Image 1: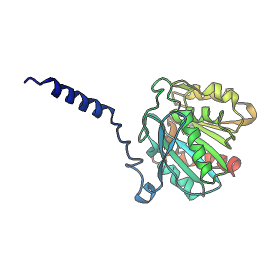
Image 2: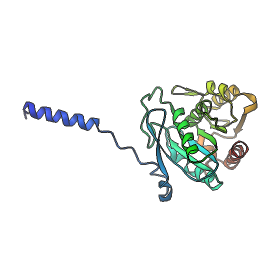
Image 3: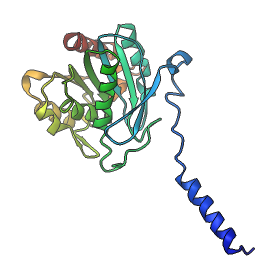
Image 4: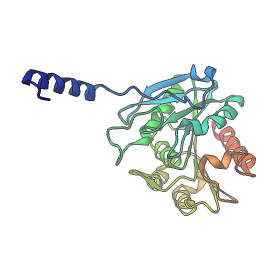
Length: 249
């Protein structure tokens, strides 16, 4: 079949328009949030250059940002967000750029600047009346919260790193730990492949600010807090809640 010049031009314009039309963002927490929780889903601008998805649960003067592993999204943290919400905290699990409901940042995949997503989330909590912010991240999220904790102004109240690598996609947790001026709690399993890396980040943290908990087994990241996966999950959770209470109020 042959087309005239005008037809070819029309087809080319239509193809360009289709390619240029932005893809609608994925729903936030569709697989894990209740109907009531979905009413609190939100999007906010990040310094990474895109809009980030999250869900704001609970209210309180102290707020917690929860940052997921890779691959994954905020659904990894919803079970624990509910735990913290019941204890009277405002909680904001987020989808880092390139995951879940958040599109990739212009710097992806080399420099996605996930730390800027975390910083933006802290700003959202403060805009909702939170006075003290604690950052908690698992694996890739742990690396991201460490970098963010060293940069956010005004400073956060504390940071928790669960099984975080020392470096990921241009984010250097060791360098961030050296600049840290807020309390840091590290949790990792003794058989985790990232144990040595967590120890590196811990050793780079000023001694007066750091605490390391090494637990039995091979659990990783959010899995350390899952009672269906880890017999010591309740103790791991208690350590985090005690940290939030001590430094976040």
